[in-house]
Image 1: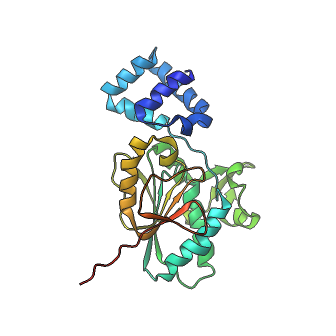
Image 2: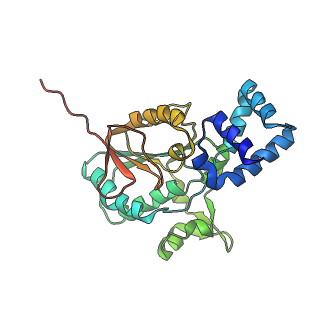
Length: 271
């Protein structure tokens, strides 16, 4: 599959060439193998088959998902999350805290959050009860996330004491997260474009390196609006370091990190 043929596929799904450019080779290999297995000879034949067969289209859409992550990716963001975002939420005094990792891939972001919360719980007397949703459209990614076994390269941002305290070695290069970190995570297969958000009133939504990276504006904007509706007033949206928000007047930059935004509080109406 050459780049021109790959662009045809991207256009078919409303995907962005700029988002896929650096990761396209691996995706193209998966797609080429899949086409060979089903004996499609041309890209046009492949596209026509997907138009006629929604199940085939769904399979290909999953094959085009990308998982590139590691624990505590962007350390500055996690420090701002701990010192300012979580502190603000805790100080509100709510009984519970709702968090959504949207497009969680293989779970590094989810377990990073659980580790961060655990370190805070060791210092503070009381934290809100955590309701943590982790969703992805690729069921294979969710299966890996539930298993919780990762290569050493995924742990390179971790301090040595966290690596030894929250992981056990399976081999010299494979590490498993502690079982207690898996407790309470609500894993769900979820398509950001077709499915409603798993809950409403989220205090924090992680939307990093998926919707705003890989999709064109005309596709991403309706999905983004649904995500915004599920974010509570005063809640925080976290995006990737190379991503740009769609035009919206409902999010304010958070002063402690450029990739964190806070939703406007709804002003109460007068009498």
